Length: 482
Image (tube, rainbow, N blue to C red; front, side, top):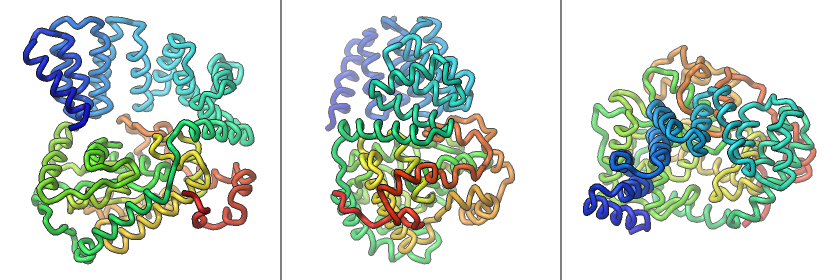
């Protein structure tokens, strides 16, 4: 049993033995969130408020986080944040989260206003300043936000350096932008666990070898059923997993599908990462494959997850978590009817974009251009494996082809998904749904080819790393990284 589960049971017992103890209910709410019991978490926080918890704005802000980050329900999240700010207009978490939600919804003006307010309440914190500038990269150099950002960057704050890199690139100051990226990633390299590609690759390769005989028996079938798995109910919609590598257009593709009346986006759902963790895996490292009994349990939990996320019957849920690429074997074993769409992009543009994004420390490759290139190459091998051995369940989408000729690329995809084309999909940028990825502002714009060839802005430093290999359409072979 994990520490979170132990603490959850402890506070559950406390709340039952002391039903009017507001603190016990508050702690139960916090630990319920940790173990993924979100409905129970909300009820516990409500009990804490009912019994007069001290500083109720904290419980209200936590409830807003559960609604927005866990359940994808924005309206109740905003309502609880507004209630928290009525209790305490200077409560930093509620102000920052209000800005965060506005950003997710594409409301730039509101996001900037609340990020500015948050920055004023925490003058020693670079993060709200960084988010404020990133939400408005056209701020003038003389603005207080940009000047504060530069001071934090000079102090070697990685969040400030990353935001400064985006600001410099917006102003076409590419040498300064690259210098900021190098500085930010050098700091993270020292702070993050050492990245070792070979053990991760070896573990996943071993798992793919294990599932290969099972997958090969299904080649040519309309829907592959792994031996021992439960077949889908005829009325159940086939879930679609948009996977691949970060910064390859996965958010863009999910937004395009979200504009179709037959689809419901989950965003980067935490459901499968939570299960993979319980199976001994991580973000880029697979866990053990579940047996038949566990598959049935996980399948039921997945259906409950869709219900908690208010996915209406008949809609196709899209789960857009790129690192599910490493967990396809587990997902396919539990949901044999699932379809996987792998997004891919020019490796050089992908590399620059990943290098300019602070990913979770488990993605340690992201701080080193050579390691990023090696990781991209390995992801291509994984995609090749699934396309060769399970072709009916896997579809590849090229970012460049998508933005250059969207209808030409999308119509075959919708045919493969068994859903008619819908012209409104090209108006995806008009959606006001919540987007919780680094592409939050890009997907609020119409399709454009302007981001193709972004890597050429950094040709000099990249060529110093990769030499003539930079001119190849394929990432270079391993450079001996471990």
